[in-house]
Image 1 (cartoon, rainbow, N blue to C red):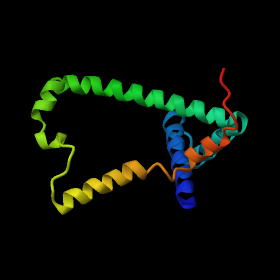
Image 2 (image 1 turned 60 degrees about the vertical axis):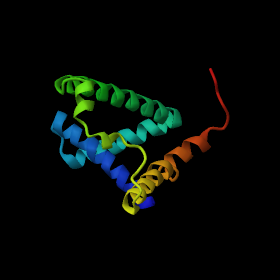
Image 3 (image 1 turned 90 degrees about the horizontal axis):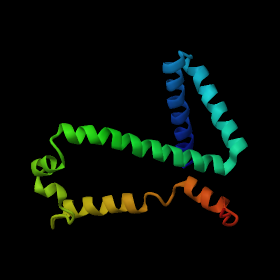
Length: 136
């Protein structure tokens, strides 16, 4: 589990360093150090509130981006009705066929989606960090 956390940090630092390299032509190793320093400073100064605000901002940016991409794509495809009419009816089937492989695939998807969020340390950390409700 700890190895996955470090790999996640490394991926975030590398992604930010690639942005810095592309925008400012910084060397990749220097960009990784800058990314680590920026992340460390904003978490140190802002604490859990800074992380929560960053999560909220990222979610807004992601949803806005998805909508901005979806609208022209749906229009280019001829509209929602055209997309649905060209999709195979079995794509929208919720209940699996009654054979071993379909049921096993269905159960594995339910376990992955339903139980996949349980071991996420960041969720536990945020819940446990709240000492009391501070409503404004």
